[in-house]
Amino acid sequence: MARYDLYRGWFRTPRGAPAVVYLREGTNDFNTAQSCLTEDEYGLRDRHITGLALDIGGYLGTVAIAVLADNPTARVICVEPVPENADLIERNARANGVSERLTLVRGAMGRAGESITVRYAYQGGENELHHAYVGNSTITAPEAEHSAITYPATTLSDLTAEEDATWCKIDCEGGEYAALDDPGVARSAHITGEWHNVPFPDGTTGSQAHIRALLEPTHDVTFTGPVDGPGGFTAVRR
Image 1: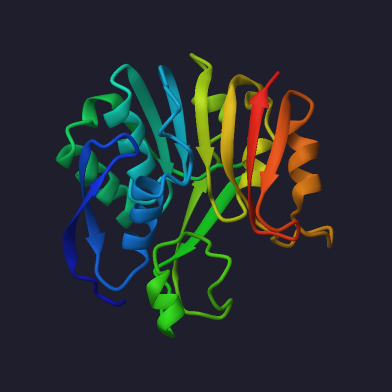
Image 2: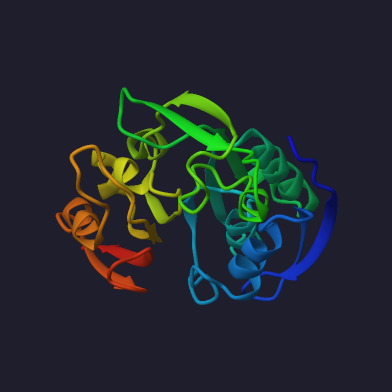
């Protein structure tokens, strides 16, 4: 398995608070932190969050850190399946003084009763090494050597069993369809994330139509990015 040197990156949250993030040299860690924090990919600058927020597909914990640093009464449940990423989330939370308001779930989202296998630590070409810790990456070579870990699925109903979520971010490389296919989706007031055009067992491919079917019974949905995907979506509970 490739070894990656760790270094500290210095950023600002969407509202300007200082943030330190431990990153792996030679991976897309910096790009992800820059996108979440400096570029405010998820529109957090003008969103004031209280109570429970969800970060599904936590990766480095940058979204959780942004929410917690900029919203002092918020709490975050962060779900991340890749063990090395989960370790970094804990480290980054400590470095930014937000550990007490962060609950980390080392697991994978899915439908109740399912088992979810996540691939990571890809080996091979530059693309695989760069995206090594993007679990179930949709852009790495399918035949690339990798590690894998399997979890019983965590559901949205599990995460919101005690309290509705005021805000939920979901970006889990195709796992969004199974995650949103749960009654607990109605317990998130605002959902923002990415959808991926991954193949399904029935021969269809993930699409905006699939996201609409999962969310429109309870939410109004809008999309950004190319119609053929991958792209972004926002869902606001009616």
